[in-house]
Amino acid sequence: MVAQNLLVLLDVMVVNAFIIYREQTNDMKKTLMKFRLSLVAGLIGAKTNTPTRAKKSPNLPKKFKPYVAPGLRYDKTSHMPKRGSFRRCAQCSTKKEPHHTKWFCETCEV
Image 1: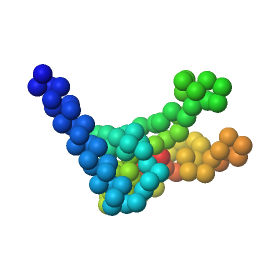
Image 2 (image 1 turned 135 degrees about the vertical axis):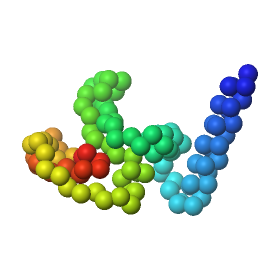
Image 3 (image 1 turned 90 degrees about the vertical axis):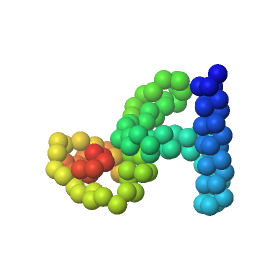
Image 4 (image 1 turned 30 degrees about the vertical axis):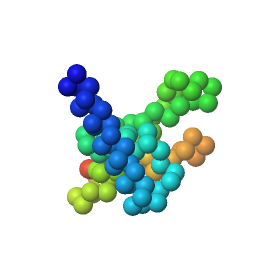
């Protein structure tokens, strides 16, 4: 019973934070679900990949595109380039025009 009350309280806090966020930023495109995902990613400091879904089967992930949580991406630490293995560029590479690079961000690993 207490755990349920805490979950409801947490849910109310997230919705209230979302309402304040929309009022402060005038960002009407961001949904509550995207806000929740960015909130969780910011809290855990995620440097994960988000699945990009295929057109034929929308329920199964086909490939992954790098995602960096906004809290980590825009923090005021030094994002320095580092030389690594040869791989596709996360910023400008597409399926039609693949671009490869040996450089990546040391903090974001992208």
